[in-house]
Image (cartoon, rainbow over all chains, first blue to last red; front, side):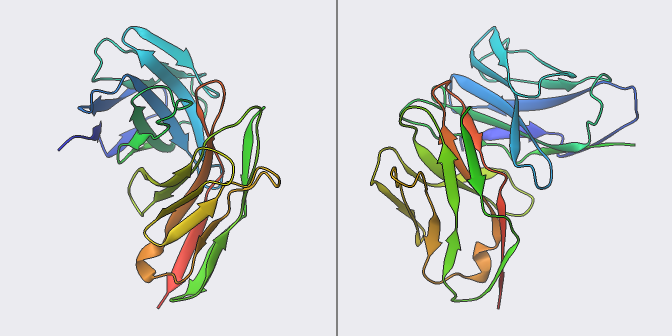
Length: 116
Length: 111
């Protein structure tokens, strides 16, 4: 079945460590996104990518980095510079940019990161 | 900039009650509007959408009408079930090509 796979589902990290969250899609979508979800704050956009080898900062990119070397993959690295990294992270993809007629984002099941 | 405001939760209802979750937006141009639902422990999935004024989106008994004059897109369902318990997000497609989400409203339906 087509979809988005995020791993790991749960991750624990010590302060000062970088961690990388995986996101893979087999929907042949051009655009991919990373969102952060905190209780009561909705979803905030971290980074997004429209095409391979290109990506843009979202609203809260500080302390995060991404790469888009393959169409199917859009990993997110949470660096030690991120002050408050404990959160639920959601990866999504869409046929084109979300402002287009399709508009629909397809989400993975999320990765919950806890910093100890 | 563009923004979405939802009513605060949690909303607690008994089974078969009528549901309304309010959503208003601020946007330049003519955005598309969406409702997404997140069941416990899962990612979000699209519930319904409307792409122009006066459009009504509907799915699984839920409805929402794009009201340009009141800049609203309220979610309604005539008779909720326990299985509808989830977090509901209103969103709009901004002219920068990104989806802007509201803060989410938690719905709890009791038997």
